[in-house]
Image (cartoon, rainbow, N blue to C red; front, side, top):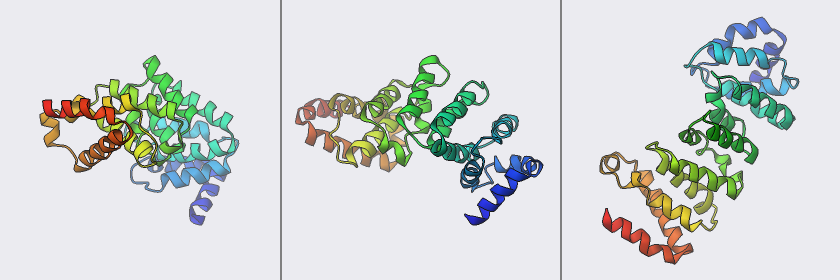
Length: 239
């Protein structure tokens, strides 16, 4: 960590050196890019380097990763929420970069307001419903409010992505079952009976963890809401 902090200080003070290594820092080879970005954000509290970072993220094409920017934005969010929101609006307004908003949101820390930005972008067509899949496997999802969680699940279930059902199921398992929170009956039943769980082709390719999560959520649903046993059993029998 100390070494990365020293490198971040050097990058901040020597812009041309920093510019020359940006292509590598934005590549998949830079495994510590998020940590370096976090150190850089702490030093660059006035966001002097932001235009350079944004330009590079756009310039080096589709193979770049968002790790560097994600770490940088994480630090900025802890310094100034207002500044953090402003930087995200700049990303959103850039046609070539807005696709990174979900992943950058996950990397920089989930909050009700940051996820609500994604909801708004889905509503306007700037992102797809399936783009929400980028944020749901974050450990910080447990910090979101229940209304936001329920909206995530509802939007995923409306998506035509083959992973939508699994994504909604994972949210239910991590937010409700793991934290021993009572499941919402209607939304949980809708998730458990999602067509993707009963598709024969997809079923043959299913990850064993998915079946385990399905069983955990189903048992919790019946424990919380015994009335759901019959409609759930009916769907299982039919398939």
